[in-house]
Image (cartoon, rainbow, N blue to C red):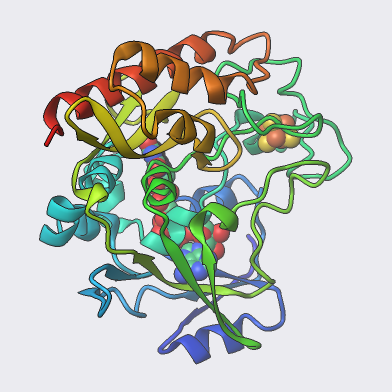
Length: 329
Ligand SMILES: Cc1cc2nc3c(=O)[nH]c(=O)nc-3n(C[C@H](O)[C@H](O)[C@H](O)COP(=O)(O)OP(=O)(O)OC[C@H]3O[C@@H](n4cnc5c(N)ncnc54)[C@H](O)[C@@H]3O)c2cc1C
Ligand code: SF4
């Protein structure tokens, strides 16, 4: 039996004050953290329940949306302004987990869920630099079919598991944070770190820093967007490859594009090289494949996941093809 203190925060200030000693963890829906505690990967002495904080989804003065960090994933996916203005986000959320888990999971918890690398969860028999820095990584020479092809390091090849974050990366979402030093914002694309030689340091958050909200900027482009997830089975499976994309086409010319990838990197992967190739070019399959190749030229697959390079290439081209068919003006 492990002793544990539970506290329910009644305000942002209350939450960050309770987290000040660095011994606690914020508790959202608990769908990831409680599993990690059961496996003794995480052993916090205090759980600070933040589900009573803001879960409001409201328009901003600038025409975007502000989503409270305690909003449940289901509430975000079903919100009319998300479905009409940011369809890739609604689709990404619905592609994740199961209805029961989405009903529990919060936006804050989804952002900060940890990798599903099976060696990371195996505290008894596997070496893992993310869990025990300096110990080694059994995935690199092991079963690495689901691991990263972009952005990994010699210390860690795990992927970030979130579907929602892939859409948020493509949408240029802004994450609002609070700590005892005050409030600040970080672009979603800058929230998660690449592993380099410290895979245990996964985000730019300071100890005890709380996610309070996620802001979606106003975007006409986002209304013409989608999310496609390729996985081994149609539910309860994390992405082998996923693509969040938005495309604006005038005549045959691509005016603007947003592309982010999931299942292939240690963080939600904004495919800026792909976007750079697309802008101003003719919307053809050859252009879409060339754009995917520009990003994948940097891929470093492992023995078990070479297939992901071609799978990503084809999925990017298919999603862009689908958007270009429906999005000409
Ligand atoms: C069987 C199963 C299948 C799944 N499949 C998918 C899938 O296909 N796609 C997918 O994207 N996800 C999937 N998930 C993961 C699921 O989306 C996450 O578990 C969930 O989003 C986490 O949200 P939560 O609120 O429950 O977080 P919690 O488990 O409560 O917390 C997760 C982490 O976030 C931290 N945290 C929580 N709130 C805050 C906050 N406001 N500020 C700072 N830190 C905070 C916690 O301290 C903890 O470290 C699956 C999970 C399960 C169990
Ligand atoms: S890939 Fe990362 S999370 Fe998985 S075993 Fe290696 S160090 Fe641990």
